[in-house]
Length: 165
Image (cartoon, rainbow, N blue to C red; front, side):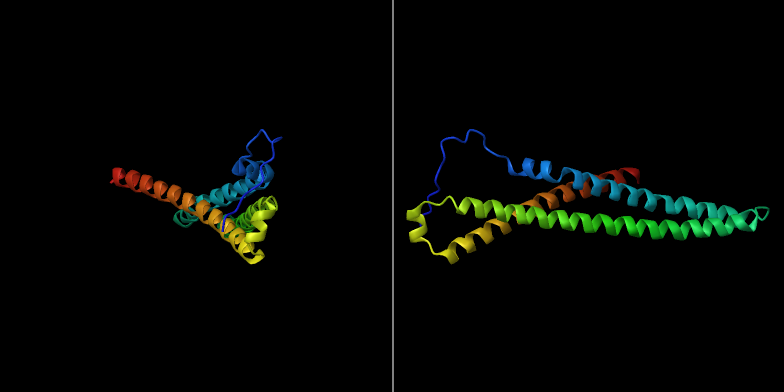
């Protein structure tokens, strides 16, 4: 079926969807990034604490309380890392769901601008199906771009690690 979209003559700007999403969720994205950075710093500090524990065992002149402190610090570090990582994943999952809802709302709003002749030739089920497919394809496109970036990062890391050998 042919779908004709009504165009309004008073719109001069072409909205950029991803820019609008970033503006709407930039605070939440930055907060999620901060949570991830804190989690990564805690993950990187674990080997340092382990080194301190090994140094404690190698030097018998150090007081016992220091070993207990290092052991407690290692456990607290793992606990805090888990908390920050789970908070990060929860926040990112929520933002992803809101992105999807925004995409679905955009497609729905666009479907409301269909001309009457298009509405007569197309059933409601077909319109809803097309809306669902469009929103799903948008999500798939975002995932595909993310996977390409991830592949590129992995390739770069492999080259760096092979250069170290």
